[in-house]
Image (cartoon, rainbow, N blue to C red; front, side):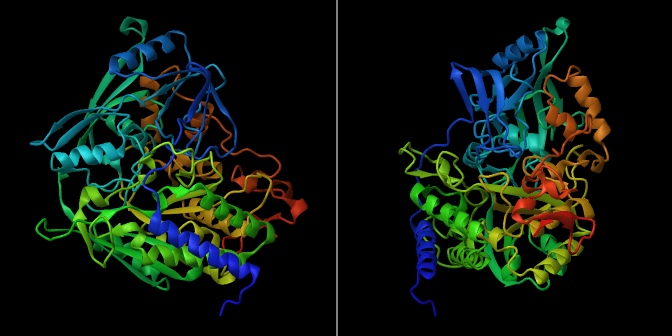
Length: 583
């Protein structure tokens, strides 16, 4: 029984806040601001991501930003910049990539925003194709396709992404069926604007179609080939799905994970290692005759009252400061229970959840993000990670591990939890580890084989020199996945350490670099960051005092941790080759 003392009163308050947030999450909130800010009209600019901080917390600057509204304007912008050999980077409306993919070098670069390249161009119902401009969001694509009785079969779960952004980073949903879960594997044509010689006006639009090997480079491009202007996608007829979430013990997760993805088309899992349980998504197509009008409005993507966000963040900061692992485990358990009780935001009719299965049309279930349905309310409400309010501030580590190795990875994580049962409670506050399925892709920088993707979100301090609770366990899991089992990092997530030597993991990386050299021989769309990631220069990691705390390096000396706070560089506990910051 909980006795009425200050700590238990806070626990009850947190539970009340979380539960009422689920019941009364706002539909309207403050619209996320443009990630580009300029001190004068479109000049002297800075750019960040939607979370307000890059992995190294640096400020990315550009001399100017252009907002083309047509492909013709885009060609002219690129031509002018090419003439003066000016560095360029493409920016999207919401800028959700965590690494510095949008940062041009120096302070004289040009940002090219696709914010107004957001039109639907053509829908061919007979061929089941859709052509769009690259600034079209996933939500727009889903809605417009559904009006024509069509769907993109697999997609990320967050709809605030642009088509160009998804191709730039290899964004995906979850399946090993069909062509797989990556959006780029449903692309059949791309128009991309690249630099050119003076005889071609310094810029040109290239059309790349299925069968052209260059499409394998353009499908996952990291933004270094040019500016994608138009994309044509192969769609499918609109269908219905049936979803049931089933919670089980994680004792046999290692055996289940490889099988489960082949048993259910849209399978995924949410793993709560410290609670020793897993939520399995049993999710398949059903006949269109089956009744149901289900809706997915995932709780984590709804707006929240800013005052509630501040209380939740302050509570977590206090737990970190006091080393209160028990408190984190209580809040993690409450978060999980609330999500499970509320079916993670699923409803049977768009209003109320009455029980499983939840059946509905694919377009109503495949993605969500209602915190973007925003009125300006003075930031009374906001997306939970909006940097303008005191809300979520986190690291995201995401990597995919081949089917043949995934059982061993899971068992290693479970061994760590046996040693430190409370170590993952902090991750469970952020809804545990999302486990999704990805399929081998022909894209040169796409997935190399069928794999399982693990996505961890966890606390990040506002102070880069402040270690986290169980710093060592989280670092060891990261290194086990990336280095022991050769995991491929998600291009749009992760800390710097994830990209150390990454290009060596791609069999056809040289083919990609050949296309890059052909399309942009001067490297105008490249930056110091992309050159490092692509193995053209060294220095993905940044070695300095405290660098391991932020994932800027793997520690090799105590000074890379926080020795003044009792954190020293030591070998891992399960993976002995790991080097982690531990107390």
